[in-house]
Image (cartoon, rainbow, N blue to C red; front, side, top):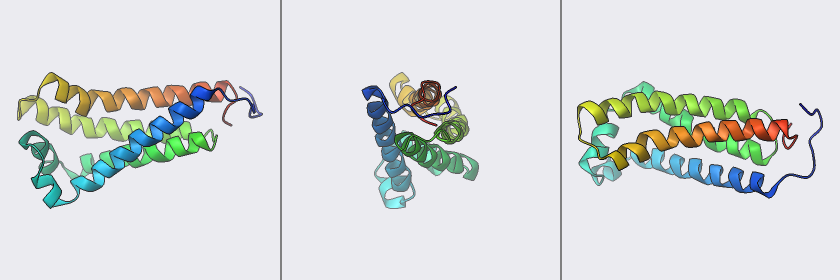
Length: 144
């Protein structure tokens, strides 16, 4: 592993870091919207079932996932190696949240495969990718 940060960073680093920040920023907006009962009342029944029945530990996981992910991507943009650790915490938060979401989806509400993929699987894929990419950026000397 390089002790020095390489100055020549591939353009994809900036693109992926910014897209990750946007993804998690939108997740943060979603989280804030879900804290407003008037907004939640306008959601489809399937989504309300998840939100209204979400225990505190799953809500905390959701907050850690989206805000940790945004901070992790911001740290990537600042080229800080600690981004990997923050992104791991974000992934773990998402995993905790998905335990509840998948439980509701499988045993309470009949979700479509597409809904289940977007709400439960895609966030985990994105989170895992961001962890992998932050580690790759570290090995290439782009962050340190």
